[in-house]
Image: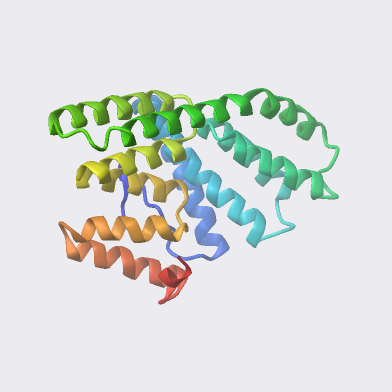
Length: 237
């Protein structure tokens, strides 16, 4: 396994159910500790990673612990600030003969309905902020452009304290890449990979950034991804 953002491991030892269960549990424990000791965005990132694997287990190991996994996933979605993921879990419940109509589904439906608009609004604010940065691409003063980039990134970090870490880290990564801030871009892509660990574009982009400073680390990232996803995994991009 490879250590990525916040000392977290993005991937389990293998994609067997038992290894994924252990990895998910580790992320949940790390998230609980981060909630007490780290900025909220760290807690949300780790929770989002655990949520990814909870949903993976629902799909890859169907029919076992379904209610427990859905409830856990909804709680993790809440902790991650990712109400779109919670909405997908509720859609799973509506399609499940075992879960449709259960009281907890109705209760969570009310919560998601109330909270989802805030996430949508935050993501719109992030996109507006990024377009503001892009609109300054012709600014010749590097200092002024860097100051604008820092201002936009600071606003994104504020949203990251209350919202989903995926769009926040995505914006941070795009700005850092545009500015040539490779270390910061790598950190953001590493966080994205914790959130969505089997998302191939993140793996490729992270390894490309690593290769600029440490070929051995980039090679290790690619080789580990091959062991999980197959030797030609990047062709899926």
